[in-house]
Length: 521
Image (spheres, rainbow, N blue to C red):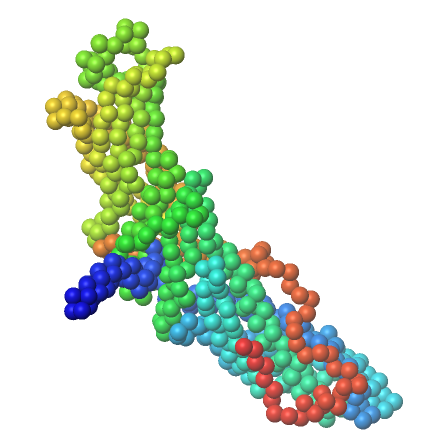
C-alpha cells in the first residue's frame, strides 16, 4: 500500500517536472520586439496640432433652425454659423490607466444667424450677432487594442457647458423684442451646447480612428518579407508617458511565428518627445525571415569574378585542375556564397554585432557540361551594425569587421586556404556589402501615423536592446491626413431636432430650466 502511494507521488512529481517549462512559458507575458513611449513633451506637440483640428471641427458644427411662438410673438432663427472661435486655455494630458484627457476652459464662440420675427402686426427680419462665453469642454478618450492588434480610441466621454450668451440686435423692431433676448439667446445657447459634444464625438471615434488606421499592423517590408506590428496588450498610461508594446516580428509567411526569448526592451527616459526601443528579437526575426525566404545567397560567375581573384583561385587549386580533362581546364569559375543559418544579432552597450556563418562553393562551369566543384570553403564573419532613424524608417549600416575561412575537411587544407583570406575578404567588401547596405538603406517603417516623422534622433545601445530618442514633426496636418482616409461624413451629426411651432411648449419649458449639459460616453 505504501509502495503504491509512493509510486503515485513519483508519477505526479515527474508529470509536474515535464509541465514546468510549459507553465513558465504560459505564465509569462509575451515580450515585445518593439516598444514606443510618447512623453508629455510629445503630447504637447500633439495638442498644438490637435487644437487646430478641434477649432476646425467646432467652426463647422451644424446647428439646427429654431422656430416657434410665445403668445403673439412668433420667431424663426435660421442659418446659424460660427464666425470666430477662441480656445485660449486648453490642456491635453495623460490620465491612467489608459486615457487621454482633453479640456478646454473659458473659451468663446462667436455666432451669426438670421431672424424672422412677427409681433402682432409688426414683421421684421435681420441678423443677430451672438457670442457664447465661458465655454468649458471636458473630454476623455480611452485608448485600447482592438481585435487586430491596432491602437484605437474605443470610447469617449464628453461634457460641455456654456456659462452665458450675449447678443446684439439690429433692425426696426430692436427695442420691441430686446426684452425677449433672454428667451432667444437661451434657446440658441441650448442648441449650440448640444452640438459641441456630437461634433467632438465624431472627431474622436471616427476621424481620429481613421488616422490611427494609417498605422499598418502587418505590412510588407520588401518583395520577400513582411513585419507584424500588432499590439501585445492595451496601452499603459502613466501621468507622464504612454507606452505601447508591439510584437515587432518579421516573417516570410503570414502564419509563421518565431519564439521571443530575447530581453524585453526597457525605456526609462522621458526627456525627448518619443522613444522607440528594439530588442535583439526584432533584428533576429528579420534574419530568420530572410533565411526562410532563401535570399541569403549570392552567385558570382564568369566575368563577375575579379581577375586577380580568379588567377589566385586557379593557382590555389592547380593540383585539382590539372587532373581534369584539358577541355575543362580553362572553363569559367563560379562562386556560390550561401549562408548556413540565420545571422545572429548581439546588442551590447559597446555596440551591435552580427555573426554570420556561410559556405563558399568554388566550381568550374564548362560549357555544356555539369559544374565541377573544386572546393567548399567555410566562412565566419562578424559585422558591425549602426542604426539610425530617417523620417519614419529605421535604417542600418553594416560594416565587415572580422573574417576567416577554413576547411572542414582537414587542418592541412585550411592552411592551404590561408592565402585566399585577404582576397575573399576584399570580395565581400566590394561586392557583397554594398548589396546588403542597399537593402538596409531602404529602412523598415516604424508604427507611427501618416504625417508624423522623427527628427533629431539619438541611438543608445543597452544589453539586449537599443533605444532611439527623438522629437516629433508633423509633415502633414491632421486635417489633411484625415480627409484623405476618413469615411464619408454624414450630412448631419446626431443632435437635437429642429423646434417646430407644434412643439414649442416643451422647448420653452426646457429653456427655463437649469443649464443643460451634453454628455456622451
